[in-house]
Image (cartoon, rainbow, N blue to C red; front, top):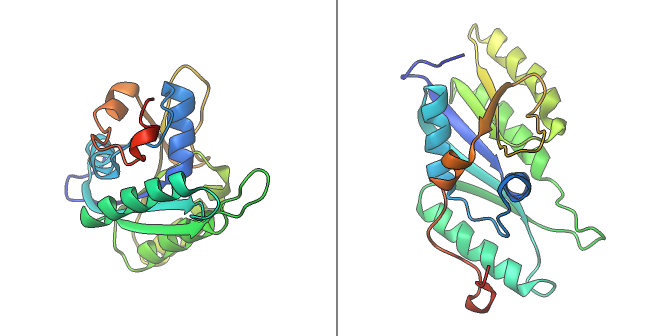
Length: 195
C-alpha cells in the first residue's frame, strides 16, 4: 500500500532488534546504522513525509560494561543532536542481560502518537512479535477518530527467513538500502575499532 506524499510518518526504532537483525543478515559486529538516514529511507519507500524519528534501546551500566556504555552514550548524544527522540533504559545484569521497559515504551508512544493524530503512518523498525497486539489498539484509536492509520514493520533481511510484526505491512530492508544508511562515525572506543 503506497502512501500519499503529504502523509506524515513517525519511525520508531527498536535499536537492539535492528542491530540483531542487521548482524544476522549482513554480519555487522556493532550497531553501525544512522537512524535519521534509515528513517528517511523507510519514508521514501512507503511514500510518506518523515514527521519524527524515535529511538529506543537498553544501555549497559558504566560499571559493568564501560565500553558499550560509552558507545551508547556517544551515539545517543549524536542522535539527539540530529533531532531524534532517544529513550534509553539501563540493561539488567542477568544471564543473558535483559532490556526491560523498551517494548512497553514503544507501544505507549505509538498509542499516544495515534491518539494525538501526530501521524498517518507508524513504522516500527522491529520484528518483535510482542508488537502484534499494538495493531488492534492503534487501529481502534484511528477508527474512533474517523481515520485510517498505516502500521509498518521494517527490518533488515538477508538470506535468512525473517518476518516482520504480524498484521502490519511488511517492509524488508535490503542490504543496499541498509548500507546507504550506515553512520560514518564509529562511536566505539578507539581500541575496539578493529572490526
